[in-house]
Image (cartoon, rainbow, N blue to C red; front, side, top):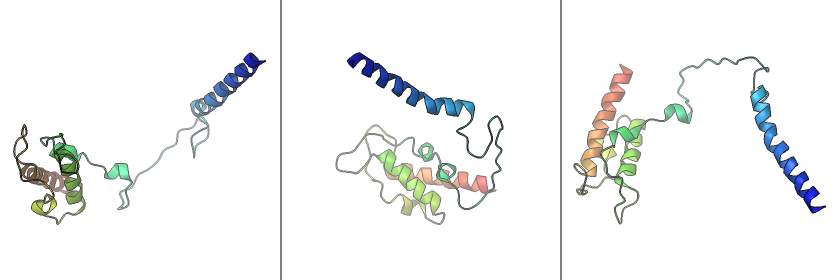
Length: 135
C-alpha cells in the first residue's frame, strides 16, 4: 500500500507540473489573443516608461573602476560609480563634481586614476551620449 501511495503522489506531481507547460505550448497562456493567432502591439513614446525601457548600461562608463571592496566603505567603487551615473542621468542639470561627490579621491591600487576622476570622466561620456541621442 505504501508503494501505491508513493506512485499516486508522483503521478499527481507530474500531471500538476506538466499542466502549465502544456497550456503555454498550446497558446492558451497568452492574454489578449485567441489560440493560433499572433498578437501585435504598438508602442508610443511617453514620459511614463517601464523600468526595462529606462534601464541603461551605466557600467560602461565605470568599467575602469575597481570591483574590489575597500574596507570601511559601503559597496565597491564600481557600484558607487554606477549609482552616481544613474543619479546624473535622471537629473540633467547636476554637475559631474556634484554627482561624483560620494566617490573617494584616494587612489586604489591596480586601477587607473581615483574613483572620483573615473566617475567625472564617465559623467562626461554620459552627457556626450545623451547629447548625441537627443540631437
